Amino acid sequence: MSLAVREALLSFRRTPALSLLSITTIAFALFVVSLFALVALNLRAALADVEERVEVVLYLRRGTPLEAVTVAIDDILAFPEVADVVYVTEETALARAREELREFQDVFDDLQANPLPASFEIRLKPGFRTGRHVEAVAERAAGFRFAEDVRYGGDWIAKLDRLRSIAGAMGLLIGAAFGLASVIIIGTTIRMTVMQRSREIAIMRLVGATTGFIRLPFLLEGALKGALGGLVALALSFGTYAVVSQLLIRGRFFTAGEAALLVVFGTAFGLTASVVSVGRHLRDV
Amino acid sequence: MIKFAKVFKAYPKGVLALRDITFHLSKGEFAFLTGHSGAGKSTVLRLIYAEDIPTEGDVRVSGYATRSLTPRDVPRLRRRLGIVFQDFRLLEHRTAEENVAFALEVTGTRRSVIGPKVARVLAQVGLAAKARAYPHELSGGEQQRVAIARALVNDPFVLLADEPTGNLDERATRGVFQLLRDINANGTAVVMATHDLDLVRQASYRTIELQDGAIVYDSAADAAGAEEAS
Image (cartoon, rainbow over the protein chains, first blue to last red):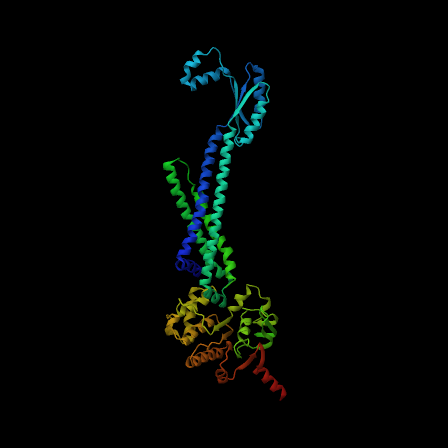
């Protein structure tokens, strides 16, 4: 084992430029993935905030009898998606409007009759606050005979949802492209190291070293490069996050667990790339 | 111990390197493999250390049939063999003792065992004083001694030497050959491929001569035939 560690470290000294290149490409691949992950994470957090406020508002026709309202509340409460229903009378609506729109105080004072309709504010249960469910509830609510109009913020929720999916997909796509580049570069590094050490490897085989023993330094080297790449990516991500937080918008950074995951992912990535290429290249020696 | 039975070896381009080779090498025996370049001497050795497998026939080395070796068996077999070449095959950036220790390191030998073992074999080949020298600081004969020390350090039952004196002057050749004889006297079998007939004549060891991949002379078979005839 100690020989394998020594050989793995020695390879960094023998091919510093190539080693640096491998680490840099892994770092950039992971940096891109982590940036998009950060965007997706922050979008999701923002979305959760918005979703809290998602509700369907059903405006009632003027003169809807109170009995019909009471029955309808029970009906709507029976919808599986619905958490609660608040009945806002015409008077309450006006009072709220006065409260919220003080600058139009004069207009309200001049009113002959209350122009605002009564409404149901229908709040949904967590897990049902997505575009699809909101739309379904709105559609059913619109079916009531006394329904005048239904309003809900479904459109822009769906847009945010799409944005999040696009951010995720872009991150994966660009990350995969960089990932492929690092696989090729790691492969090339390993091929060069194998060729450089072909004499040594041949002697190892002659004196009875197992294939696993010969491969071990290469695998360690790959894992180490992956781990270093992951750390560099983490540092780059934090730098970017710090700048963006200061200049544009405050968001959240990775938790310690998520950061560790990035490094673990880098390690696994470097190791896998090595496993793939070392087997192929060792056969040629 | 080493048994070849009707062995043929063909290389991909249809070149027949060995044809119908049959011989048996006993424990502790010393045998020369002679013949011109390209006669098949190295191929015989390669078949013994399982670098190649026979196209036809059977090669058995210390109980292993090399044709049915699994990838795991190959290193196991090689740890029981010592192999030296004409070009020494030493690692340039390692000292003599590090080169010898390398053979133990790669087989996972404990560090505490490696030091004394390396010192012992270096003394055995007469290089105790040059343990810290790098290959380029040693003469050809000395480099071959380091290679022999490396081959011996795993206590092999047979030492395979492919033209071990091919790159050496006469004095170094004599020294290395004497060393191989001493090793054999201590119980290790030696198979030495050489085209140096002077060496062959110096000792009355078994000689197997190859020509175009076939055995044209085997002193052991000859002796057996002579015994039968009398």
